[in-house]
Image (cartoon, rainbow over all chains, first blue to last red; front, top):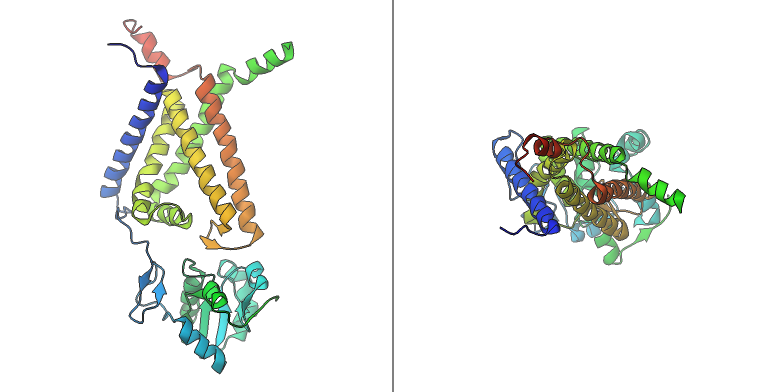
Length: 171
Length: 163
């Protein structure tokens, strides 16, 4: 049999490594206790109120609210907006009157911010948009701390901005 | 001219190639272990890159770590060294492209969110530099491998029937 050119043989062996590795991976995943389903649910979902929520949103999570609802609440001003994004993004622009509590730096920020949040007041958490999870994780944290009226606005900063609603910049 | 020749001889030295193989091999095995142990977290990271179509995310998360592990193992043992280094270089190139796309888009890879936070950009840039260094090692091994201290040479020596 004539010898294959060297490079072809090298590439072929690389493909073999991929095939063996993948097969081992699939078999291991089937028998591992930490195995995951091969077809994950990564797409956004719709709640019963037709609000788009990320794949990780659970039924018992704080309620997700729409832009209409948020806008109505904003006008009645009986609500606290909580921005879960990083301070730089908050300073660059946020919903008018919002308070910044970055989820990623919760421990550092919560001692100053939490006293400003009455436990029974309605709080609406948001981050940059439906792809971000900071608002969801922050609202879970607050719920566990005893805040009873937390809601999540998954449309977030991007939807608010696109709707041309009131914003402000700075601290 | 003489200095250049010496330099080339030094950087393509068989012992240096062995060192590169060990460094890259151990790195890939080490990196794969955490992903193998926590496929759910790894899938979440892949999702954060916003590049793969959703139906491929979990399959990729389950298979890639074992390919990394195997390629790393082959580099260390000295089996199919060219193939393993080619594969690793290709994977690193894919990572470099994926990280660059997200740096350009302004996605913070920690949370998968869009952010102007310089800390996120800095971390992405660090990751990029690290991958470039490993890519360099992979390419060096691919071109200058001399199979110093390797299983393949050992096997060939043991069986004289092999040309």
